[in-house]
Length: 358
Image (cartoon, rainbow, N blue to C red; front, side, top):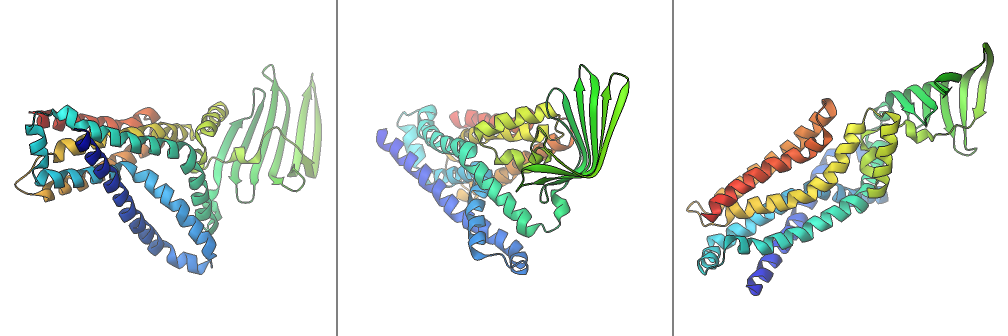
């Protein structure tokens, strides 16, 4: 049986690798065909295009890991089933559960790699991928602006801006309030505020400060005012992809800070964290489903299994996108949004597994 285990593990991993080598270049070509005109229009340097597609490989691969696994297992299992090899294996007295073992071992190799890369490698690639998009492909700078931002900086300080442009590091209609014992101590307003990197200070335009002391008010104003604040300018950014650029340790801290500040995108951030666990788990589920469906020779040949595989793969992607949108647009729990597709396909896998054992 050890020989068979090694054979299946080798087939699993080599077919999965082949799927990656086949579909990733196709993904690059499709993406390039969509962007080639803009890349020419903005005269993007070749080395930056090359770097973009090196990041794209990780972005694309991480998104579709489970699909590559599913199609790989469907393909090679259907092939050996069509040659009656699996029938011979099971007829020799080996149980279906024992037959599944090398598939689960192989799935573990892929799942561990997917988990590690998703936690520590892909976030940095996502940052570079998205920054390139906004630098060269989304020339409408307003696409990066966020509006009506309210942040709790700490227990006493609160910030509001009507909009924030991360490209210029500038916020508009700025308001800063400081409280002590639930009483307003001072309030600062400005038409805009921007971060001056070379001086490491904030510069406000049409600065106005009102300080409250006992029953008196003190007014201070200026056309321009340079000062410091206990927050970083990028904390005003609520871009959806921010969570995707944080590694495992950074993400937990980022979510804690966003929760404390009352970020309107907290559900999106939580969804990212849950998906980093649900994607590796889906590797096991889709492996189980693929083996259960394709392990027996069919009169229709391999075609019916491959057709089922393609339909199922698209359905999985649809479920994943649908429930992600539900988290963003409704009050669906991020946990459910990440795990419902896995739960649905686990039930489907167990159904086909039960039929396969009969």
